[in-house]
Length: 614
Image (cartoon, rainbow, N blue to C red):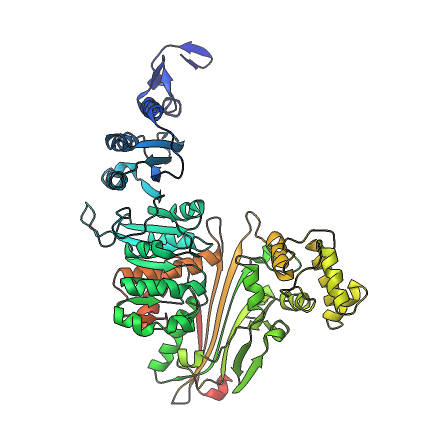
């Protein structure tokens, strides 16, 4: 019985307000129509045989109006009709309320069978139901536990199939489930005719990324031992996106060449990748590298200006391009003014790279040991108080961009002012060294580093490493205290000072809940023309993270996804090794990026002659 206004009421529940009637599960001992599925679900679950997680199975994660549309009962009918066992992992139900926005329910169910064809049929039929029952507005991701090693297996969606609704299905293989993978899966997975297969060593990571796609599939794959499974995964894909560490790209590329499957990466094109150019061309495939933020969006936005100048008969006289991933100003709340959205070890290694660039016709070379000491103020965003470090070899962009005659060619990395000086002191102290810590606590490590260099007390050692700068030494002391390194805090990896130091940085310099990151990019380009006139171009991008994804995830993931989509759709048809420096790539890419809110602000000043521009 129901109680309404504190009085017993035997009247029908449907006379209640919609908010109550839609939430009523049972009346007089019977389930109401909206909740009759509970009985069916309990009966079917009771018949289930418990399986080990290692038994062959697929895990379906389905979101939609599963109950109002009757979709859930039909899904269970399919599973039962194919004589499969199942286990419900999760079932979240939110009844719809009249006049309010409809809230989707969630079902996570593992379906077990020893027969591959049976599991494939479950997947095929459930996918068909989602396509046909429009009222469910459903999406699905699935995890496939089966380890495939041969093209004779039939577990995947395969490439080039045509769906029951007449549209060609596409299968995108994403290798890696790191920090930028979610935006890539979301973008490519917007179409219900595209399956985004995410391969990661860890099931939870793969499922979390696949969850962003309307049709997502997760598979376990250990990239350190690719073997036959890599070949199988590529064989079943229409295109591959490698988000693995850059040294692994050539291995993936070689398999893609052998199987004539296109490949996209967001990493710098290495010499080893370039050595595959001829093989790539002979295979008739496209390998598009350097489609992320930096490299990627920097190439596109710069080449748009450079090509415009060249097409009008001009030449570039000065080129400067800088980029940085930083915490938003309000999140730069620690002594280093920095937080890690990627590997601390990667930041440390990058801070010790040799660099060279040209400035006013003179080549400037910076040894990696002095890179952090070479930072200079950068004032394009005056309110942010930034500095800039040279970024590797800028001179190679003379040929890449067709601007070899420019007197200045510079590429740099942005940080908040003061970061580089403090990081340089920490380097001078020996915290970037691979040597053993020789101690159990950080206090002992610092004392040992100090004694090794002939200092009796830590304060004098820090002042020496700060080149006598008392203010900088005080900042360094404060930073070490804030990182809990001037205490008995245990070291995490006694075999290496730098590895233990990276663990400290990763522990203390993470983004807290609700904090935003920020991406900055700025080009300063000057050009001259045959009639003596000149132009000064400024082009910049500022992106903040939000509650859904970081700025780094947006800029890297969306850019790689757009490059992938353009190849899939035939909008990029060139074969061989490609970079996003050609019009066929950057024009449509920048247009699609703008639709995601990633828009460059451009300014140009025109001068009658070069002297006026200077």
